[in-house]
Amino acid sequence: MSVMVRNNVRIIGRPDGRPMVFAHGFGCDQNMWRLVAPAFEDEYRIVLR
Image 1 (tube, rainbow, N blue to C red):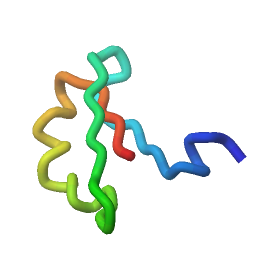
Image 2: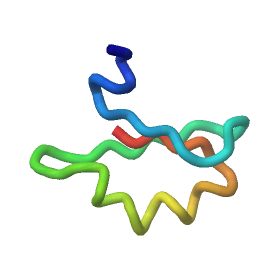
Image 3: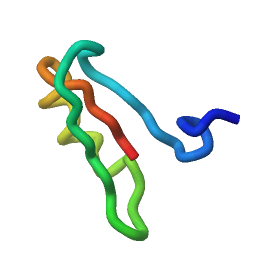
Image 4: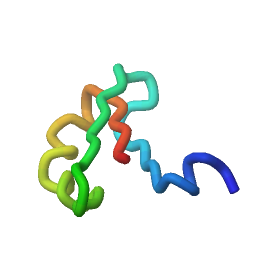
């Protein structure tokens, strides 16, 4: 199993964009970024953890 799968990491946005990491706090999940992340997808490579 890869590290990406094991840690449930998703990468969205531009493959050649500057990386931006969204990390949720304890008790939350990636779903909390569903309304925020799309605003940055055109310019950044977004890493959701």
